Image 1 (tube, one colour):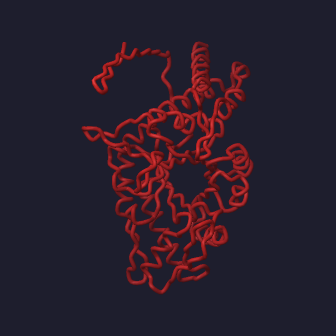
Image 2: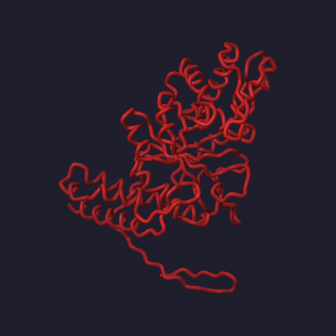
Image 3: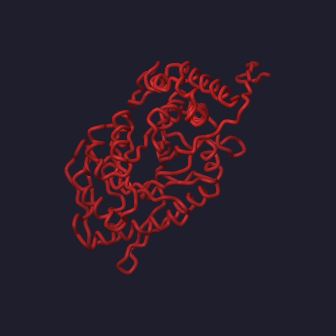
Length: 381
C-alpha cells in the first residue's frame, strides 16, 4: 500500500511497508508518565484522552494562580479553593488515568503556598533574601507555630482533594531545593512528616548526583534529569523511588522523545518519567503540549508525539521479552548488558539542555527487532 501526500501543489505517493507480528504487544504497567503543567486553562477532556493514549497517567501542578488554586482567610483558618485543579482531576478520572498528582508547593525561588498564606493572613510577612544564583528567594516564617498550623491545614486540604479522586498526593516542598532552599528543607520536611507521616515527599536534584546524595534524607522520591546511572544505584541501595525528569524536546523531531520516553527508562528502571511539557508562556517548542487542535478540535499528533508512541513500543518490546524469558534457559543467551549499553551510549549526541538524543535510530531499531524475534521464538515453545 501507499500514502498519498499533497503539499504546495506537489503530490507524492509514499510506499508503506507493514509487518504483522504473531503476538499482541503488552504495554508496560510499571512505569508512569507524569505531565508537568503550569496552567490548566487550555486542557480539555480530549486532551486527557490523548495523553492517556500516549501513556500518561499523572500530573505535576504548581499551586499558583495560573493553575487556578486560591486561598482565603475564613475566620482565621485557610480555605483552599482548587477550582481548575478539581476539573483537571475529574477529566483525569474520565480518561482512566490512575495518577499520581505531584504538587509543587514552591518554584525554585518562591514558596508559592507560603506566599498564598501570607497574602491571606496579614499578620505574616514573607522574608526576601539577596539574590542567590541570580534570584532572590521568598519564604514564610520558619518556626512560627501559628504559621505552621495554617501551612499544614492548607496542605491537608489539598491532600484530601487529590485523594478524593483516587490519586496519590506527592508534594515537592521546594523545587530545585539545592539552589536556594536547602537550609529550609529539613525544617519543612520534618513539619510535614509530623502531620502526614505516610505521604511520600519528592525532591529534584536536577541531574546533580552530589545533590541527590544531600537531598536523600529528605526524599522518598528523587527526580533527576541527569547522572542517571549513579543516581539509579543510589536509590536502589537506599530503597528510594527513582523518577527521571525530561521534556518532549521538540514538536518536529521524534528522536529526543523516542529516547527519553523509551529505552532509557528500561536501562535505569525508574518508576515514573516526569515530563515538563506545557507552560502558560510560549516561544519554546520543548513546552509544546497540548498540540494545536486540527479542524474538528482533536489534538494534533505532531512528529514529537509520534516519537513518544514509538518510544512506548520500544519499551513494550523489551519489557515483554524480559517477562517471557524470566526463568527460562533462553534468558542466558540474551545480551542484556549490551542492549542497555546501546541505549545510553551508541550514536548519541548532546543537545543544549544536556540530555542525550540519537543521531540515528539504527541501534534502537535493532534492539526492537532483536526483542521481537526472541519473543516469537519464546512463544513457539
